[in-house]
Amino acid sequence: MKRSPADIVREYGPFAGVERVNGVTFDGQRVWVATGDKLRSFDPESGNPLRSIDVAAHAGTAFDGRHLYQIAEDRIQKIDPANGRIIATIPAPGGGGDSGLAWAEGALWVGHYRERKIYQVDPETGSILRTIESNRFVTGVTWVDGELWHATWEGEKSDLRRIDPQTGEALESLEMPAGVGVSGLESDGADKFFCGGGSSGKIRVVRRPRQSRARAASPPKR
Image 1: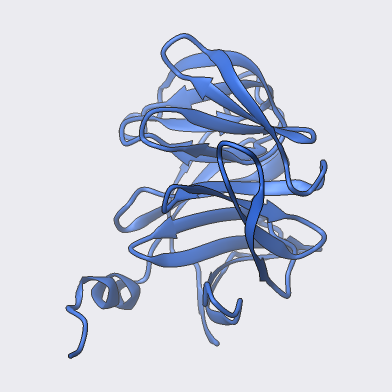
Image 2 (image 1 turned 90 degrees about the horizontal axis):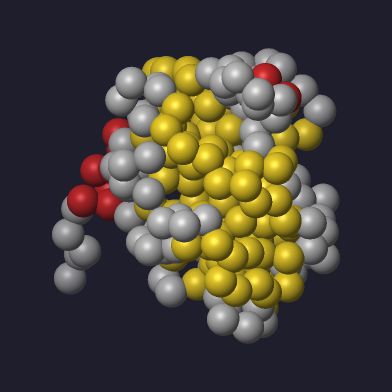
């Protein structure tokens, strides 16, 4: 596995009234942060808070292009961001031990923290479609350009890992500074990762490695 230090290029927060970041997602304009009893958003350009939704927000957050998804204890809530209403609920695969959440390929991808697993889940029924094994606690999940990344946090060590989505093998690691944990992960769809900062109340931006971006842009070999 290739290892390198994470290139932290920006920090946001801590924000007023936010004691902990439990999850993070990006809707193309706003960054959404799960903070326990609210989903809050901010402008990634200015860092200014925008709006909030009163909803249980205990772990990972995701956006499917239209709706927000939010882990709340042992369930995943589907939320209309226009009015903040919960329009559907499915069981969370980890039964309350769930962590990261992402949307890709028409499905939800859910981290199971202490079980070191990532589940592909049917967003309509909650049925588990696939299980990917990791060898570290999973605290965030994201997909970008066909790559699966997940965040880890054990003790004082935390990193972002690119893994093989078929085998779970760790291919690359971006190691966070000692004592800096990641409690939620989302790509901006290009060259940055938004990383929740746990009890620091911060969101940190980590640069996605160039070789990873170049590999995604390269045409397939024939």
